[in-house]
Amino acid sequence: MKILLYSMNFTPELTGIGKYSGEMAQWLHAHGHEVRVIASPPFFPQWSVFGGYSAWTYRKSVWNGITVWRAPIWVPSRPRALARVGHLVSFMLSSMPLLLAQMRWKPDVVFVVEPPLFCAPSVLFFSKLLGIKSWLHIQDYEVDAAFGLGHVRGERVRRFALSAEHWLLSRFNRISTISTAMVEKARGKGVEDSRLVLFPNWVDVKAIHPVPRPVAPYGYRPTLGIPDDAVVVLYAGSLGSKQGIELLAEAARLLVCSSDIHFVFAGNGPSREPLRAACARLPNVHFLDLQPAERLNELLGMADIHVLPQRADAADLVMPSKLGGMLASGRAVVVTAHAGTELSNVVTGRGMVVEPGDAAALADAIEQLAMSRELREQMGAAGRRFAESALDQDAILRRLEQELQRCVAG
Image 1 (spheres, rainbow, N blue to C red):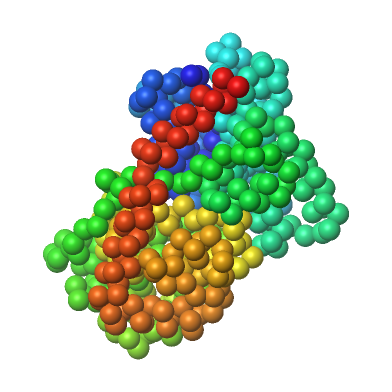
Image 2: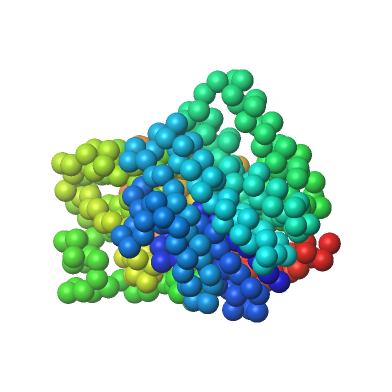
């Protein structure tokens, strides 16, 4: 098969959506498929184009045998609502010439990753023009999230956005998304079962695995000045508005007198500086920049407890991609989620679930786990078993390959 991957975030060297796109492209290429990629220069999560790339020029490169085209993009220094729209529109417009340039190659299927949904119209036009298949993969329901999180307001604007989304969803040959709750939401938006595919985020359970806690003088703990016998609570990932990051500072403040509990926040994003300011006088809090993928297992293995805050108004609109690595690392997890959401269902029995926005409940759950090594180990082992059985990278991508073949043949 010839597969054109249209993914704005394509950063295989990091974590998150960009890493998943890279791993998917590499896996398909290794299994005999021709893969090409259209993406922006890497900029996320620090909202600044990486060194060695340009925000204003086109660039073609070959990564592990895969041809990657990078289109210019405007990256706002302060990613607020209107700035985000301009950011997405800039990539939509600049990437269109790269898309049309693939006409001579004529892929069998165009696989576009949302966000951004802004690229969907040009992908549909391109696929109809060539008579090829189109596939939309939804990592986030960005329209619902934009209104749910208050980034965009107005009932007329909302009705127009949802109507446009419905029109676009109705025209793709396949719609995939990453959780059963998000599949149900797609059904609610009018997508028929014959076009729906569950394509969850995966984890490489060989690369991410339980490791014994590092002993000084090497590893993250001594670098950060954390005693080897301390209990480390780790948040590793982007620091953005959907995560409810502010809750972490409140929990750390409530536990500041528990000298054996240390918080480590590893990541970048627009909420990093407000979080750092809120934790300025807390000696039990440490910060790390987003770490390279090759050190991810070491980073996750530093933790005794993983913490995953999520805002209530983002429930079931996203399924945090970082959860798979947390579970595969064999450590207990504390999440904020309402009962009955998919995030709650996945974590129950493998960690602790508290109500979103309740800093006292979050701190209490952390303290309970900190006091019981046996409970942490039981939950961590259960999470590891779930990762091995339900989130294995090779099994998930093999199912995707079969669905792609069915789509092209159909």
